[in-house]
Length: 184
Image (cartoon, rainbow, N blue to C red; front, side):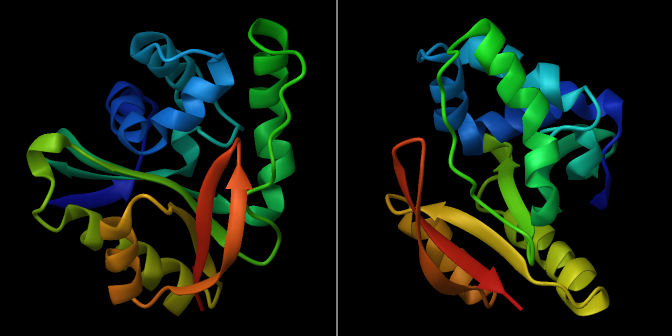
C-alpha cells in the first residue's frame, strides 16, 4: 500500500470515499437525502482546485493503482477562503440562506473527512492514514491536528483516542452534534 498526495484523476474515488464520512453534511448542503446528487455535488468540488473539498487537500492510500482510502486535511486558518466557493455554489443552486458554522480555525490542521472503502474497513487503513498525518503534521511540522467526531460514532472516537487525540470541546455543524478532538 502507498500513501500519496491525491491527483485530479483520483477525484471519482475520493468523492465516493468521502461520502462515507461526510454524506450527512452534503445532504444538508443540497437540501435532500439523494446520494447521487450529493456525490455529484461533492465530486464537483473534489475535482476543482482551491476549495475545502479539493483533491489538493487530500491524501490517498492506494494499492496497485486502486484508491482504497482518502483523507481530507487542510490548514484551519484557510477555512474561510476554502469554504467560500462551496457556499457560493450552495447559495446559488440550493439554499440561498444556508449558514454553516466554522468547524475549525487558525491554530490547527483540520481533518475534514476520512473515508475507507467498505471492502477495506477493519483492516487498519484508517489508522494508517491517521498515523501518516500525525507523523507529517504533528511530528515533522510541529502543528496541531484536529477533527470533529459525531457523538453517535463511538467506534471512530475510540480509534482517535487510541492514536492520542484528546477531547477539547463540543461543536454543532449543520445541526449535527460533534466532539472536537486535537493532537498536539
